[in-house]
Image (cartoon, rainbow, N blue to C red; front, side):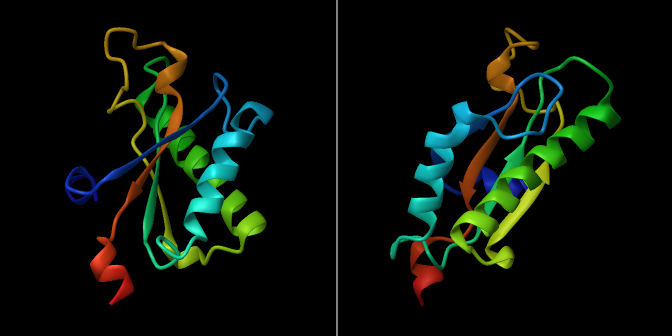
Length: 127
């Protein structure tokens, strides 16, 4: 999955989380709205989108892996519930603390996020 994602365009949007939490916050609402609106647009409605959860570097590998998966699932559930996006168009994965956004600050808040990656090229999605 990571190898495929590396070759696909990432949507320049990240949903950030509080420390040790997978709960969506009011601060994330504008990004979630932008994402939901984009995914129901005619340009992206047939896309397959990966929701990649990440954590900061504090804590053990197993715990952070599970937390990153829960973060991705929180965003997926939100998009399904609020925008009626088909569940099979959203792939939730977790990367734990393996892909820090800012390796120079491994405990930084910017590392606690869900990154959005369009997995299907536009010409494939629209057939």
